[in-house]
Image (tube, rainbow, N blue to C red; front, side, top):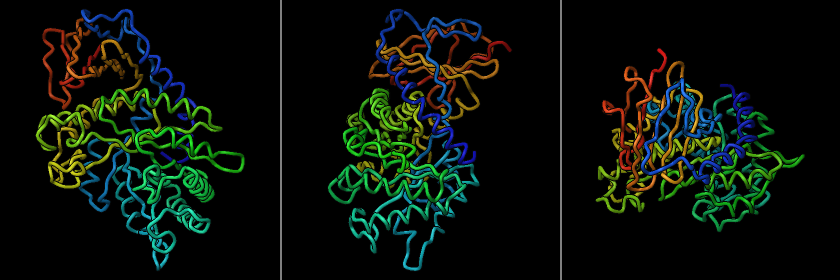
Length: 450
């Protein structure tokens, strides 16, 4: 896809994202009077009018197509193969200022090799523009006029260098935290840097796509303090980035996206929402507090369930982009949280979350017509997808210890099958399933009308 087409699509998504998220809010807050703990959910075939009040998700597949993952080791072809094979479309990584502006001049060669390797695999890049530079801003963020000018030149060089390539940009990373801003956080100082950087990127390449740096969690106070920088003379970023980590169920992110979308709806040009970093580590978070360590099979199964559900949530929310952190564990210590975020272990062995995410991408490939039923009372979600003469469902419960009965009697016996979180076959001979939160999403395919 050309960057021009991608920019048009992002602008279109930004204009409708608030409406889409408000629709999701209606689903979350409305009580379904037809719901009852005693009634099974009846999945309709293609010829039937469903009794379930499905909501259309017109941008579901746009978000799915903009799902990526963070990497640190950019020179590893095996790692990039794994990114491609699981189903992601881009990688997110740092384009370090002090790595490309050298005493000998500008040198992007290491990142050029990455972009070439990504393109050979049909992948793109999301580069983070940052951080300190020994010549211009040693051990601090660029905040003085001279420092900001130097950083803007770096942004100019990057945007010009990667013109017409599948590369997007973020300006800094977690600028609302002192460890990443390299100083006490300041919305005013970050706004100054953001304005100069976006001007530089857009001047060097008007078709370039650039977002704010991702704030920790969804730091609305910091986002509001930075404010809308767009004006007749000042280009605005295409997206506002957030890092919506959480220790609660993935579905809680929907409300946060709705609230943020309401804030951004007041902007001169409504930016897209990018969730550029989130994860479910197997150690250090309360949802795995009862497990032995980050290598405990129970912890890894929880990571797999939450990661798949979170991808589904972000696609359902129809945000502009989503990126998991990260592709591979950064070490082998089972009691170091930083060593337990990955979809692969430190030796490149696929973990349960990798297998589950790969199954999710495979199941949703080449589908269309996404619709959602979400019951906030019973805490169950049903995603319906369609292809020619085929209807697909993803059904899952949220909240611990929850279960739901699913009636498959309306789907034809021949041509209907089900699989679990990892793609293994599920027995549906009795035409009824009981799905638990602990089990994770169940995937159902029915070749109706063949």
